[in-house]
Image (cartoon, rainbow, N blue to C red; front, side, top):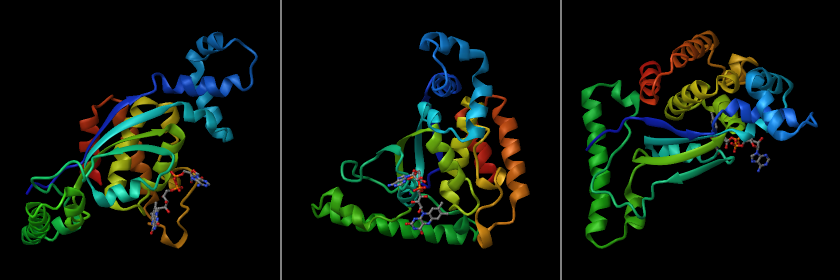
Length: 254
Ligand SMILES: Cc1cc2nc3c(=O)[nH]c(=O)nc-3n(C[C@H](O)[C@H](O)[C@H](O)COP(=O)(O)OP(=O)(O)OC[C@H]3O[C@@H](n4cnc5c(N)ncnc54)[C@H](O)[C@@H]3O)c2cc1C
C-alpha cells in the first residue's frame, strides 16, 4: 500500500493582495473617490500594509484571501486544521469516495526506527484496510466501513483562509510546539503566501519571530534556528519558486 507525500498548491488568491488590503485600510481615513484611491494606492500599498500591521488595524487584511489544495495529509491533520474556524474547507468524503486501497501518512518517528519498523507499520495499515474491505464485501456502506480506518489514512482538501486568519494560523502552527505534520503544512503555506504577498506575510510565522516565545515553560529553546529558517525561506521564495519547489524545500528541513 502506498505511503503518501505532502502536496500543497496555492490554487488562487486575491489579485494584488497588498493593494486590496491597503485600499481597505486607506479608505477608512479618506474622503477620496474609491476608484481614485485604488489608483493612488498602487505605488504605496506595501508601505501602507506595513503601517496597518504595525498599528494593529487588522480587519483590512481580511480583504485578501488564499485558497490552497492539500493532499497527502492524514485524517489526524484534518482534525487539527478544521479547528480553525475562520477558514473554509472542502474535504474528500469517506462516505462517497470508497477506497480500493489505503493511502496513508508514515510518521517520521516510525521511519527513523528503520526498515523493519516501516514494514511493521505497513502491515498495520494493511490490517486496517483488510478490516475496512471485509465490511465493504459484506455490503456495509463506506460511511460505516470507514470506522475501521486509521487516523493515518490520507485525505485531501481545499482550504481558503483570509490573510488575517492565515497570520493567526502561522503563529500557532509554524511554532515548534505544533505537531510535525501540520507544522510542515503551515511552513509550506507560509512560503507560498509570502511569495504572493511579501508585504503581508513578512509578518507571518511563529510568535517567537517577533514577539518572543509565548510558550512559557514549554519553549523549545530554538528561537535562533527558527529565525534562520524564516530568513532562509524569505530569501528562497523571493526567487519565485513553484509551489512544488517550496514543498520540497520545507520537507527537506522539517
Ligand atoms: C500546539 C497546539 C496544541 C493543541 N492541543 C489541543 C488539545 O490538546 N485539545 C484541543 O481541543 N485543541 C488543541 N489545540 C487546538 C486549539 O485549542 C485551537 O482550537 C486551534 O488552535 C484553533 O485556534 P483558534 O481558536 O485560536 O483559531 P481560529 O478558530 O482559527 O480562530 C481565530 C481567532 O478568531 C477568534 N474566534 C474564533 N471563533 C471565536 C469564538 N467562537 N468566540 C470568540 N472568538 C473567536 C479568536 O480570537 C481566535 O483566536 C491545539 C493547538 C495547538 C496549536
